[in-house]
Length: 178
Image (cartoon, rainbow, N blue to C red; front, side):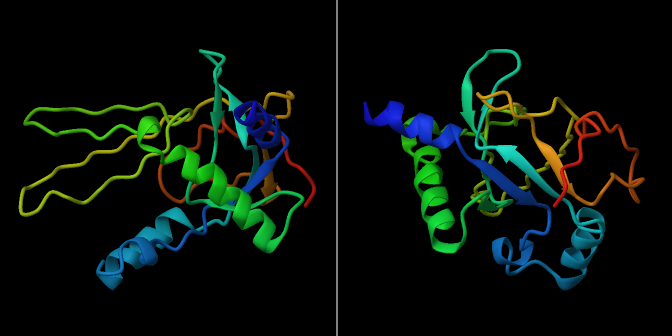
């Protein structure tokens, strides 16, 4: 009963996300030049979007919590209330039965579906060399259980990127007034 009530409550929320994330807090020992370059590439344009907190996976139909470090607040709530509810949902995501811990071996390749996964890489490589190559594939627009679609809040339109090419598939052209 409690789980069902939590699912209904979560599905009612939207989450405001932004790409203006404090990367230095996650990597406090990163060289200044590396952080400057990262910010130049990742936050040259500040984006804010609203996503359903519970999205429906487009292929499996499963309900998935959509949170992560980019969540600024739950829409319609402010301050402590928003933060407290985000913490409750995040603690559910981080429960051991909802996580995978990969035991790396030479030659391993890991892939995951970001539509249903929150990635948190643990830096436990010690003195071993670890090569990471990341690719992000533009995908569908998240849709909540009530049919609401994610929306771009700011800027008014997606500018041409300074790095790479824009696919625009995930913007859906939908802009919501701020």
